Image 1: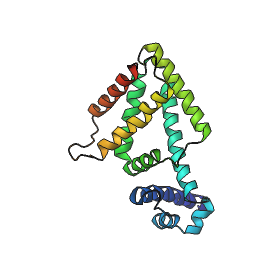
Image 2: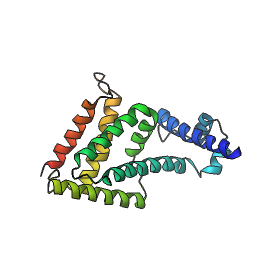
Image 3: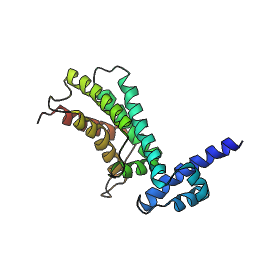
Length: 199
């Protein structure tokens, strides 16, 4: 029973970390705030993590690892085109943003913070997957000859996530995100059109 309580506390800590970061920002959030929101003592939290950075790093790296795992799964389905891979990946970003708004906002903040750099092992795995996608896309004629791994990574990961976040937050106050395929098709087609161009 003690193990279950600890797991519940850990889940609360992770949820509280995301909420605290989203509500107050990375710089202003403190371990004390996170502990209070998680309904645990600061001492308990320090028994699990060396500090705020370590706690946030774990959550961020777990999400990056999850995204990489998702791409790996889609690539391993042996598609001969990158279009279905990108479409499913983009669709999942919309689903995540709608169903897990706080986690989505947390990840977006960290993705755009230069203090959070992914470990080399995750970088290497991401590069290897992007190379596989590049090979598929070049072979199918969907990717232009001058498009490289960095371009591919940006447009599939950052561009898609930025677009979803922008729509979700209705930045201009004129349009909101919805769950239909219009948004998914729009961003998927944009990415495919960009990747096909040769500069």
